[in-house]
Image 1 (tube, rainbow, N blue to C red):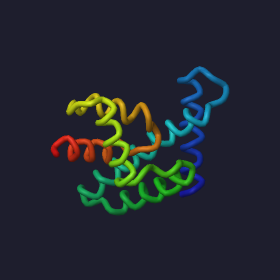
Image 2 (image 1 turned 120 degrees about the vertical axis):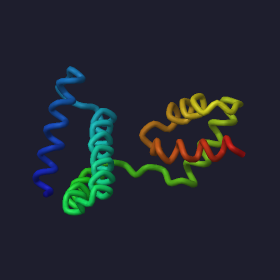
Image 3 (image 1 turned 90 degrees about the vertical axis):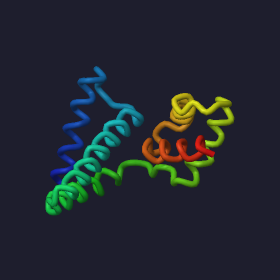
Length: 126
C-alpha cells in the first residue's frame, strides 16, 4: 500500500509540474497537491462507507494515512474559532463570504475549510 501510494504521489507531482509549467514544485505547490489527494481520499471514504464497501473504504484510509504523513497538521476547532472571531472583527460584518475570504487569506493551508465553514456559521448565528 505504501509503495503504491508513493507512486501515486510522485505521479501527482509530475502532473502538477506540467500544470504549473515548472521543473520543481515549491513546498506550497506540493502541499496543495497533497491536500487535493487527501481530500479525494476523504470523500471516497465517505462514499464507500455509506455504500457499504468497507473494504474499499479501508484501502482509502490506508492511503490517506500515508499521504497525511507529509502534510502539516490543520488547526483544531478551538484554534479555528479564534481565527474566525478575529476575521469577523476584521471585516466587521455578518457576511459569510467576506469572513471566509478573510480567514482563508490569512490562514490558507492551516485550516480545514469544512471546519471553518461550520465555525463561521455558528459564530455569525450568535
